[in-house]
Image 1 (cartoon, rainbow, N blue to C red):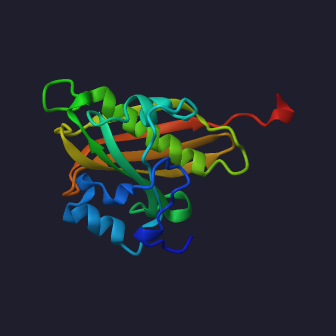
Image 2 (image 1 turned 90 degrees about the horizontal axis):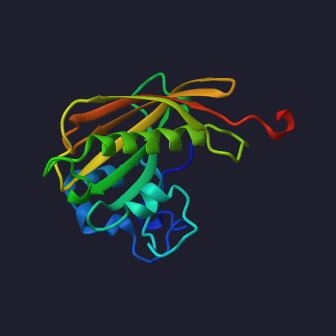
Length: 200
């Protein structure tokens, strides 16, 4: 496990601006600051994207929806998983500031947005376990259980952890929760890794 990284040393490799998302006003609430300052929170990566760039991967989440009405800001990090069955004992996490631009009913995020967040984060988690394969795994199945609405605007915590890996398959679980730890949505996903080029 990598050594915990202090907030001031958060990753900037994915940023196109000098402003750390850890200083974003939406993440100033006590629960966000406690989470980010925890010694168990490692590999903090913050994002401040230039929306005019056309070379961004995951463009739907990181470009199309990344604006002051939808995904206003987010911070990615890893920490020890609460599930004893998590592979390598870790989970991928995203703190996400959500605006009303993702609403279905006024004041509630569209259900498809919940699925998008779970697909995005479980996919990132699966990719972490890819190993030397540079090609991200593809979603084969995603089951979502809706527990409670995401009331916008808000900040949510999304978490994902892999539970099983078998040849080219990996199973990942994920949840979206509020600042009090209430689960708003949960999901289970199956991803398939690409075959090595030598076997194509």
